[in-house]
Length: 266
Image 1 (cartoon, rainbow, N blue to C red):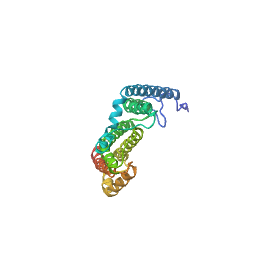
Image 2 (cartoon, one colour; image 1 turned 135 degrees about the vertical axis):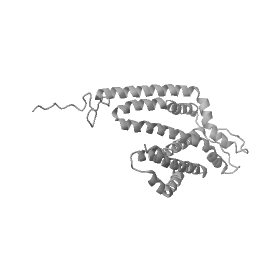
Image 3 (cartoon, rainbow, N blue to C red; image 1 turned 30 degrees about the horizontal axis):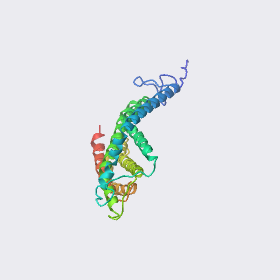
Image 4 (cartoon, rainbow, N blue to C red; image 1 turned 60 degrees about the horizontal axis):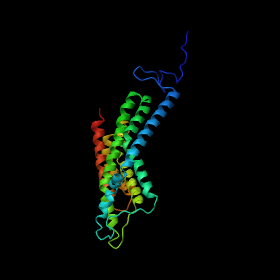
Protein backbone atom coordinates (compact mmCIF):
# COMPACT_ATOMS: atom_id res chain seq x y z
CA UNK A 1 0.00 0.00 0.00
CA UNK A 2 1.53 3.29 -1.12
CA UNK A 3 2.03 6.01 1.42
CA UNK A 4 2.14 9.74 0.77
CA UNK A 5 5.37 11.58 1.64
CA UNK A 6 5.36 13.82 4.68
CA UNK A 7 5.17 17.56 4.05
CA UNK A 8 7.48 19.96 5.85
CA UNK A 9 5.77 22.44 8.21
CA UNK A 10 7.63 25.24 6.40
CA UNK A 11 6.63 24.07 2.96
CA UNK A 12 4.53 26.45 0.85
CA UNK A 13 0.84 25.76 0.98
CA UNK A 14 0.81 24.65 4.59
CA UNK A 15 -0.04 26.75 7.67
CA UNK A 16 1.36 26.19 11.14
CA UNK A 17 -0.75 24.04 13.43
CA UNK A 18 -3.34 22.78 10.95
CA UNK A 19 -4.13 21.42 7.51
CA UNK A 20 -4.19 23.41 4.33
CA UNK A 21 -7.39 25.29 3.56
CA UNK A 22 -8.31 26.41 0.06
CA UNK A 23 -9.77 29.58 1.56
CA UNK A 24 -6.61 30.60 3.42
CA UNK A 25 -3.41 31.99 1.84
CA UNK A 26 -0.36 29.72 1.81
CA UNK A 27 2.05 30.03 4.71
CA UNK A 28 5.30 31.90 4.31
CA UNK A 29 8.69 30.39 4.90
CA UNK A 30 10.91 31.57 7.73
CA UNK A 31 13.04 33.66 5.38
CA UNK A 32 9.93 35.28 3.91
CA UNK A 33 8.68 36.06 7.41
CA UNK A 34 11.98 37.79 8.24
CA UNK A 35 11.90 39.76 5.00
CA UNK A 36 8.33 40.81 5.71
CA UNK A 37 9.30 41.85 9.24
CA UNK A 38 12.19 43.92 7.90
CA UNK A 39 9.85 45.65 5.47
CA UNK A 40 7.36 46.44 8.26
CA UNK A 41 10.07 47.82 10.57
CA UNK A 42 11.55 49.94 7.76
CA UNK A 43 8.19 51.42 6.75
CA UNK A 44 7.30 52.16 10.39
CA UNK A 45 10.66 53.80 10.99
CA UNK A 46 10.34 55.98 7.89
CA UNK A 47 6.81 57.00 8.90
CA UNK A 48 7.92 57.85 12.44
CA UNK A 49 10.95 59.88 11.29
CA UNK A 50 8.82 61.81 8.81
CA UNK A 51 6.11 62.50 11.38
CA UNK A 52 8.69 63.50 14.00
CA UNK A 53 10.31 65.92 11.57
CA UNK A 54 6.94 67.47 10.79
CA UNK A 55 6.14 67.76 14.50
CA UNK A 56 9.51 69.39 15.19
CA UNK A 57 8.75 72.10 12.65
CA UNK A 58 5.62 72.96 14.65
CA UNK A 59 7.09 72.24 18.10
CA UNK A 60 6.23 75.70 19.43
CA UNK A 61 2.56 75.22 18.62
CA UNK A 62 2.62 71.73 20.12
CA UNK A 63 4.20 72.89 23.37
CA UNK A 64 1.68 75.73 23.63
CA UNK A 65 -1.11 73.21 23.17
CA UNK A 66 0.32 70.99 25.90
CA UNK A 67 0.78 73.96 28.22
CA UNK A 68 -2.86 75.01 27.92
CA UNK A 69 -4.17 73.02 30.96
CA UNK A 70 -1.38 74.44 33.12
CA UNK A 71 -1.94 78.01 31.98
CA UNK A 72 -5.66 77.71 32.69
CA UNK A 73 -4.77 76.60 36.22
CA UNK A 74 -2.25 79.42 36.64
CA UNK A 75 -4.85 81.97 35.58
CA UNK A 76 -6.62 81.38 38.91
CA UNK A 77 -3.57 82.63 40.81
CA UNK A 78 -4.18 86.32 40.17
CA UNK A 79 -1.99 87.28 43.14
CA UNK A 80 1.11 85.68 41.67
CA UNK A 81 3.73 88.32 40.70
CA UNK A 82 4.84 86.12 37.78
CA UNK A 83 1.41 85.63 36.26
CA UNK A 84 1.09 82.40 34.31
CA UNK A 85 4.77 82.02 33.48
CA UNK A 86 6.37 78.57 33.12
CA UNK A 87 10.08 78.18 33.88
CA UNK A 88 12.86 75.96 32.54
CA UNK A 89 15.51 74.97 35.10
CA UNK A 90 18.14 73.47 32.80
CA UNK A 91 19.84 75.05 29.75
CA UNK A 92 19.62 71.71 27.93
CA UNK A 93 15.84 71.56 28.25
CA UNK A 94 15.50 74.32 25.70
CA UNK A 95 16.50 71.74 23.08
CA UNK A 96 15.66 68.43 24.74
CA UNK A 97 12.01 69.29 25.44
CA UNK A 98 11.17 70.09 21.77
CA UNK A 99 12.90 66.87 20.68
CA UNK A 100 10.99 64.77 23.24
CA UNK A 101 7.66 66.39 22.38
CA UNK A 102 8.31 65.93 18.64
CA UNK A 103 9.27 62.27 19.10
CA UNK A 104 6.09 61.46 21.03
CA UNK A 105 3.99 63.49 18.60
CA UNK A 106 5.63 61.58 15.75
CA UNK A 107 4.42 58.31 17.24
CA UNK A 108 0.89 59.69 17.54
CA UNK A 109 0.86 61.09 13.99
CA UNK A 110 2.30 57.93 12.43
CA UNK A 111 0.08 55.63 14.50
CA UNK A 112 -2.26 54.77 11.57
CA UNK A 113 0.73 53.65 9.52
CA UNK A 114 2.19 51.69 12.44
CA UNK A 115 -1.13 49.96 13.08
CA UNK A 116 -1.63 49.16 9.39
CA UNK A 117 1.85 47.71 8.98
CA UNK A 118 1.46 45.63 12.13
CA UNK A 119 -1.82 44.32 10.76
CA UNK A 120 -0.27 43.36 7.41
CA UNK A 121 2.41 41.38 9.25
CA UNK A 122 0.09 39.59 11.69
CA UNK A 123 -2.96 38.99 9.48
CA UNK A 124 -1.47 36.22 7.26
CA UNK A 125 -0.86 34.11 10.37
CA UNK A 126 -4.49 34.28 11.50
CA UNK A 127 -7.45 32.25 10.33
CA UNK A 128 -10.57 34.00 9.10
CA UNK A 129 -12.50 34.23 12.39
CA UNK A 130 -9.35 35.44 14.17
CA UNK A 131 -8.89 38.22 11.62
CA UNK A 132 -12.53 39.25 12.08
CA UNK A 133 -11.88 39.65 15.82
CA UNK A 134 -8.36 41.10 15.67
CA UNK A 135 -9.16 44.04 13.38
CA UNK A 136 -12.01 45.54 15.44
CA UNK A 137 -10.05 44.85 18.63
CA UNK A 138 -7.08 46.93 17.44
CA UNK A 139 -9.36 49.72 16.17
CA UNK A 140 -11.30 49.82 19.45
CA UNK A 141 -8.05 49.88 21.42
CA UNK A 142 -6.79 52.93 19.55
CA UNK A 143 -10.14 54.73 19.75
CA UNK A 144 -10.57 54.13 23.48
CA UNK A 145 -7.03 55.25 24.24
CA UNK A 146 -7.61 58.41 22.22
CA UNK A 147 -10.87 59.07 24.08
CA UNK A 148 -9.13 58.61 27.41
CA UNK A 149 -6.29 60.95 26.46
CA UNK A 150 -8.74 63.60 25.23
CA UNK A 151 -10.82 63.30 28.39
CA UNK A 152 -7.70 63.70 30.55
CA UNK A 153 -6.66 66.79 28.60
CA UNK A 154 -9.93 68.59 29.34
CA UNK A 155 -10.27 67.58 33.01
CA UNK A 156 -6.63 68.22 33.88
CA UNK A 157 -7.07 72.00 34.44
CA UNK A 158 -9.50 71.27 37.29
CA UNK A 159 -6.98 69.18 39.21
CA UNK A 160 -4.10 71.55 38.43
CA UNK A 161 -6.14 74.53 39.63
CA UNK A 162 -6.80 72.78 42.93
CA UNK A 163 -3.12 71.90 43.36
CA UNK A 164 -1.93 75.41 42.47
CA UNK A 165 -4.24 77.14 44.95
CA UNK A 166 -4.05 74.60 47.79
CA UNK A 167 -1.01 76.25 49.38
CA UNK A 168 -2.70 79.65 49.53
CA UNK A 169 -1.75 82.99 48.06
CA UNK A 170 1.53 83.36 49.99
CA UNK A 171 3.28 80.59 48.04
CA UNK A 172 4.96 81.54 44.75
CA UNK A 173 4.01 78.88 42.22
CA UNK A 174 6.63 78.48 39.46
CA UNK A 175 5.98 75.21 37.60
CA UNK A 176 8.87 73.68 35.69
CA UNK A 177 8.05 72.86 32.08
CA UNK A 178 9.94 69.56 32.04
CA UNK A 179 8.30 68.32 35.23
CA UNK A 180 4.89 69.42 34.01
CA UNK A 181 5.25 67.58 30.70
CA UNK A 182 6.28 64.42 32.58
CA UNK A 183 3.19 64.77 34.78
CA UNK A 184 1.07 65.48 31.68
CA UNK A 185 2.31 62.34 29.90
CA UNK A 186 1.65 60.24 33.02
CA UNK A 187 -1.94 61.46 33.29
CA UNK A 188 -2.55 60.85 29.59
CA UNK A 189 -1.19 57.30 29.81
CA UNK A 190 -3.19 56.53 32.97
CA UNK A 191 -6.47 57.73 31.47
CA UNK A 192 -5.76 56.12 28.10
CA UNK A 193 -5.01 52.72 29.64
CA UNK A 194 -7.99 52.97 32.02
CA UNK A 195 -10.29 53.63 29.08
CA UNK A 196 -9.27 50.24 27.64
CA UNK A 197 -11.56 48.58 30.20
CA UNK A 198 -14.52 48.22 27.78
CA UNK A 199 -12.22 46.69 25.15
CA UNK A 200 -11.06 44.07 27.65
CA UNK A 201 -14.61 43.35 28.80
CA UNK A 202 -15.92 43.04 25.24
CA UNK A 203 -13.03 40.76 24.32
CA UNK A 204 -13.83 38.53 27.30
CA UNK A 205 -17.45 38.59 26.21
CA UNK A 206 -16.51 37.58 22.67
CA UNK A 207 -14.50 34.68 24.08
CA UNK A 208 -17.51 33.60 26.21
CA UNK A 209 -15.59 34.14 29.45
CA UNK A 210 -18.07 36.72 30.79
CA UNK A 211 -21.58 37.71 29.75
CA UNK A 212 -23.82 40.73 30.28
CA UNK A 213 -25.76 39.01 33.08
CA UNK A 214 -22.62 38.34 35.08
CA UNK A 215 -21.48 41.93 34.66
CA UNK A 216 -24.87 43.24 35.80
CA UNK A 217 -24.79 41.06 38.91
CA UNK A 218 -21.28 42.31 39.72
CA UNK A 219 -22.13 46.01 39.50
CA UNK A 220 -21.53 46.83 43.18
CA UNK A 221 -18.16 45.10 43.25
CA UNK A 222 -17.21 46.68 39.94
CA UNK A 223 -18.15 50.19 41.07
CA UNK A 224 -16.18 49.83 44.30
CA UNK A 225 -13.18 48.45 42.40
CA UNK A 226 -13.34 51.29 39.87
CA UNK A 227 -13.37 53.91 42.63
CA UNK A 228 -10.50 52.26 44.51
CA UNK A 229 -8.35 51.80 41.41
CA UNK A 230 -9.00 55.39 40.29
CA UNK A 231 -7.75 56.70 43.61
CA UNK A 232 -4.59 54.61 43.36
CA UNK A 233 -3.56 55.11 39.73
CA UNK A 234 -4.26 58.83 39.28
CA UNK A 235 -1.22 61.02 39.97
CA UNK A 236 -1.50 64.11 42.13
CA UNK A 237 -3.41 64.68 45.34
CA UNK A 238 -6.55 66.42 44.13
CA UNK A 239 -9.95 64.76 44.63
CA UNK A 240 -11.33 65.81 41.24
CA UNK A 241 -9.17 63.75 38.85
CA UNK A 242 -10.01 60.32 40.36
CA UNK A 243 -13.66 61.35 40.63
CA UNK A 244 -13.87 62.23 36.95
CA UNK A 245 -12.07 59.00 36.05
CA UNK A 246 -14.42 56.91 38.22
CA UNK A 247 -17.53 58.44 36.65
CA UNK A 248 -16.18 57.89 33.15
CA UNK A 249 -15.26 54.25 33.88
CA UNK A 250 -18.69 53.54 35.37
CA UNK A 251 -20.30 54.86 32.17
CA UNK A 252 -17.94 52.73 30.08
CA UNK A 253 -18.76 49.70 32.24
CA UNK A 254 -22.46 50.11 31.54
CA UNK A 255 -21.74 50.66 27.85
CA UNK A 256 -19.76 47.41 27.81
CA UNK A 257 -22.76 45.54 29.18
CA UNK A 258 -24.93 46.86 26.34
CA UNK A 259 -22.33 46.01 23.71
CA UNK A 260 -21.87 42.47 25.03
CA UNK A 261 -25.63 41.95 25.28
CA UNK A 262 -26.65 43.35 21.90
CA UNK A 263 -23.56 43.99 19.76
CA UNK A 264 -21.83 40.63 20.28
CA UNK A 265 -24.95 38.52 20.02
CA UNK A 266 -24.46 38.20 16.27
